Image (cartoon, rainbow, N blue to C red; front, side, top):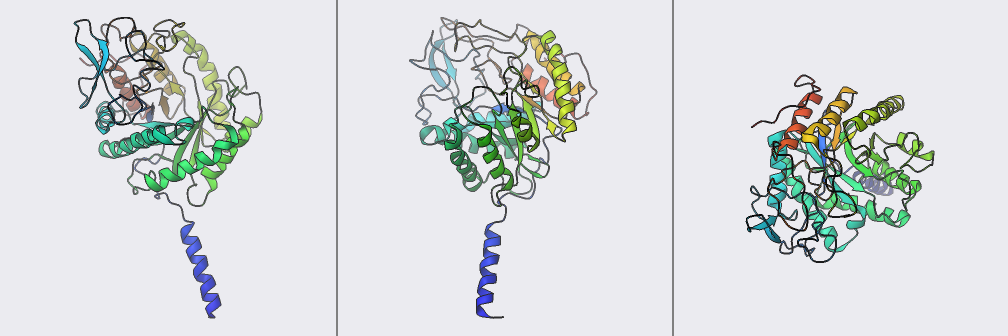
Amino acid sequence: MKKSAILLLTVMLVEMASAQSKHSQTSGFKSYKGLIMAGYQGWFNAPDDGARRGWNHYVARGKFGPGNAKVDLWPEVKEYQKVYQTPFSHADGTPAYLFSSYDASTVDLHFKWMKEYGVDGVFVQRFVGQVRQGRNRNHNNRVLDHALHASQKYGRAISVMYDLSGMRDSIDVPMLINDWKNLVDSLKITSRGNSQTYVYHHGKPLVALWGVGFAGRKYTLRSIERVMDFLKNDPEYGGCSILLGVPTYWRELGKDAEKDPRLYDILRKADIVHPWTVGRFKNESGYQEYQQVQKADLKWCKQNKLDYVPVVFPGFTWHNMYPQNPTDQIPRNKGAFFWRQLSGAIGAGAEMIYVAMFDEIDEGTAIFKISKNPPVGQSPFVTFEKDTPSDYYLYLTGFAAKMLRKEIPFQENIPAPIR
């Protein structure tokens, strides 16, 4: 063989090797099916945690203190290894403390709870507007790194969910693509071996894009297509399955949805459809009415060979963030509201479920442990009802996960808390 031919063959082999996928072949979690996963914000800070973001997400603006808070739920912090004193006080005059998501011990505890209660795992939220550069990007990378380690330690499923809120149309497409490349190269997010905990679906790493097809967004469906094309087809960083977070009324292109039928074409290129329903109904009877929409959604997805994941949420309150709204806007009703959605989704044939959210105390949807003794004063904090344990929503989530997988019989009535 001539030297020129040998050289050409060598170059071709090198190029082929360099173009191979950077993902591990498989995962310990080979499918989202059979799992109940929650959203994980991981966005809370304290001034002394090293992140230089102050009381991030505990306050919107101004000085954090009584009368100026952003959260409506106060976490139960007695199990946290590291906590930070706040300007708030309990009824007995003792200072109130909060955690920081920046601390590895915080993330570790949250994943420990997931294992203890049977919550299968989380989608770590990654807001496009927060990962461009600087201290916000640093915080998000650090929390995700903690989560990857904790998911491996406790055997919990993990995936990335890009929240497109704040995305600047085409200008942010290269940034988002480069961010995924960085996660693959620097954090080894999908290349930790075939027993890794990153969720695969249809044999491929699962990436979620939330905020597709919502009315009034500044980014176009064309930009979404560009991101999807990269995630699906790039020879090194692609080869992914895609979950698309869409409006509640995506199928009818109604109410909260953009009135563009191209949305259907984009959905057919995805793997999972994920309608957002938080706040769209306010009680059990409201959910019962929504179930007709949900059943029709499931039917459409089956006809179009797409998987479907419903959203469930335990309640809703954001009075301290938006004082014009009432406190405890969507009451939890001792878990009945949450359970009605969980059992309804499973009964309708859902094969996987998304819980909004694990740690969202800003909007009062958190399922993790909430204090029964929050601070008192100008800022009102919602607590669970008197007979509801602080860990009840973790318990219900784990119970439903067993029911989803048919490890225990289906039951429509809410399970009583374990005392």
